[in-house]
Length: 131
Image 1 (cartoon, rainbow, N blue to C red):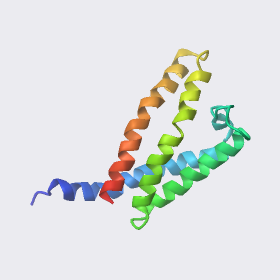
Image 2 (cartoon, rainbow, N blue to C red; image 1 turned 180 degrees about the horizontal axis):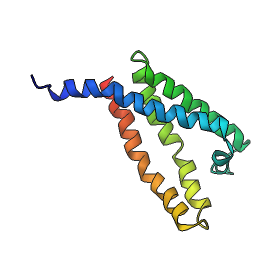
Image 3 (cartoon, rainbow, N blue to C red; image 1 turned 90 degrees about the vertical axis):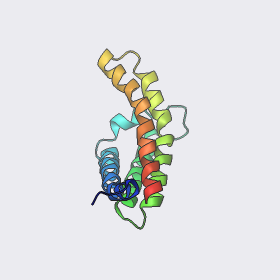
Image 4 (cartoon, helix red, strand yellow; image 1 turned 180 degrees about the vertical axis):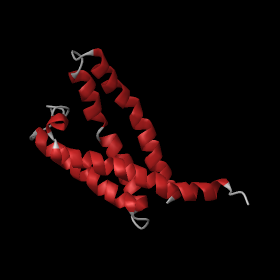
């Protein structure tokens, strides 16, 4: 018997949430294990130390990833993920600004990160709707 589209979405939502959680948990861990690259893209205009923002965003990624793993907290975690992806966008824009003198491959990588935020946000919202 063929599954209807809503049933298929329900089946894929946990797997999608787990993939997004794995990405957030991995990146969040890197904020603590190797914080220096993250420090360098924090806009200098922000008050306080860059390391504070690196650790704060790492903690937010770890918390969000953990929330996505459980069906009970997934809806809230997905909403947090969407908000997190919006919140870190200024750092990605800052990276493009700071890397204008870097080799072409690095500049293109920084530029490519900007539109990638859109599918990350829409994926989080899809998980939110289907949880």
